[in-house]
Image (cartoon, rainbow, N blue to C red; front, side, top):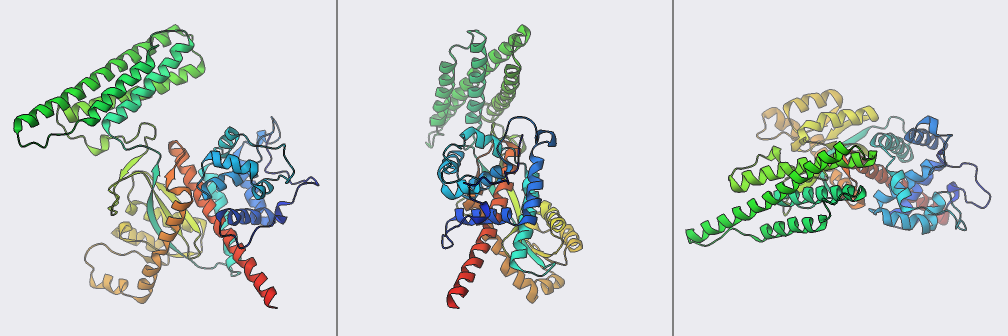
Length: 489
């Protein structure tokens, strides 16, 4: 049984719409909470957001079953985590002890009995989906536009760019990825064997340390820089021998694990959970076999491994190796995210780019933003988004497109790109970098959630939290100006 929030207030609790904040505070928490307060206290906005939040759980479970966390509280804690760039431990502490936050969650100052467990917060925030967050984001942005201007169908002018959100992975080499796979294989299969009293993997810790020792020996080896060819050849043979020994030991454990899995399945005494674990172990075995093959080909057979065959994390297999040519940043490990913002700083649309370059998403970004906000009339891009097809397709979607051409310009292109309106829009395009920097500073520098779905949820939650913060900032500045006028009068 879940509610969005208990609208029938108890007499000792404070109404969320009447919570007071320090208007001169420059911290992000009051701005975010003021934005959330506006959503709650504005009836039309609240009705839309609450209706969207109800889709988190099936309709049948709204009135039956044990009470769950209110959906409003999930939204508050989820946006707070991303906006402040906190981990769940920090969210847990603040949810139980921060006065203004607890009031926003529907608690009173003297409500000492209602506390949140860490795992409860984790599990409930995970219920949010990218689709739900995107729908709420549209409601928030439209509410922000109404605060900025009273004009109907105010023209929106966008700017679009992409950046890399890193996944929470270590630097990948074929050797340490093999160790990751072997570590999880040995550890998990030892747990199952221990549970059903099989002693085949009783030395699991020793086996893991053995594999780790071989990895460390490989990592310490360096190619010889001597001018003596004999010394070079000797060192190269040593490197090949150590790698061969490493993969032979790992192959032995892989074969043993496969045999153990066969025996366990034949016994037919495993629980559903244990069978699921076996499936996970088989996935790690596949990773291990791929890494063994690549190490043998690269070191022993002296082959060059094609980029498309490489995996850069066995825990986050969606991770990509991205080189954007930035000074001091040779590569980034993660996924590219494309964002499109308007002239007021609100992020209208975003997209996680999987194995895509900028020129492949330009039309989709413009069309997605136009579908959500029909009053979008123009958008600026950088040269990375250019292609002849994109220029034509974007012209069908938007009234005015700022898309610089790559390479030499024709006379017609020069006339377009040297026009006053084009130059003016190009100069304003850099404002999108400010929005990207704000997202990175408020949680979107590195994704701490696991899996591709978790990555997309993390990005969507960050975008929503940023837009709510901008909404709160607008309200804060508006109230400050009102107080200043009253004081002057």
